[in-house]
Length: 415
View (tube, helix red, strand yellow):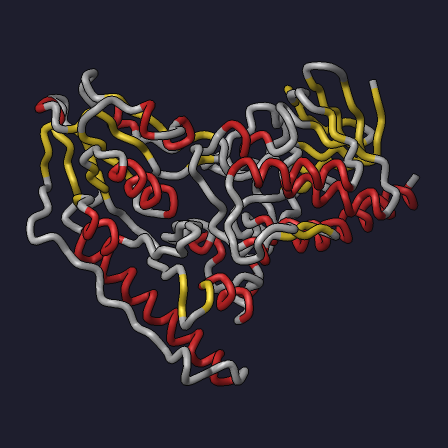
């Protein structure tokens, strides 16, 4: 059995950011990682994926990316960036160490792994927000002739059967996969539910420049009207391409992707059922985009960055297909693969402490759980709108380390 003041679970960007602040305060700790540093980036992403954020925005505490500031990191570059950061801060990472149990103990917490037992006064869960792919129960009715694949298991078009592909979900992952797979020569149908339309470039600058400068990315969890709803908003329809393309539903239709409504069900005889809400979903996304751009224009005027060379822009409304089927028989062979880009749900099978809500997520207020000494990091809108971005890890860790140090100080006074 080994004792430390704190155990951090997960050696991605959030766990390493917390490790850096723990070391800065000379708090003895260990970072437990089930695989290698940046494991989910290594194992659970498709080959061509690039970050949605430009490199100038990607920073961790005391460390910035050194490449092209206006580029978008590839997967190998992301892995190298995070792994190099771990080495730079000399993070005490225990790789290939899977946590099997976390429970409370008289002196804090008892953490069991595949290798040993740890005792700690504080635990930080930094295993990220992406655990188990969300695949609806009706997927079991998909005919056996159609391959069903979660986006986390997709790597490139070469692994797919020849023939049509249906991508379910039109957030960031869905639009990227639909575009890539179509370019491979396969017919693609995209099932569209709720989504957040976003231009890659606005008024001559990357949209992330505007969101960052206007303070939208820094909006705090205690500043929004409905934090639960805010944490369930779809990711932006953005692609980090060198050409800075805007890959929205209009672009996908121009290159030949077919749009249908949200996939709502599957009959026992293999007929896919689609919602008739496609026009409403697109109109709502267009409306919200217009409101966002209005807010950015107001900010530009107020802060005197409004210029004649890059005047305000508005984008054409989303084109709605004249014909959008509500039923689609899957036994015809037109669709050979369905890819579920429908998000993830949290999963903590090793957490033996009653802090999970009805959907399996850790209950917390800004990362502070109801159990003293237990924290969570890296989840959607944890403390800020940017919490799941690399740039958000440092700010969240800086806030939580203050709470953690205060807690450890109180323990010391008691004992």
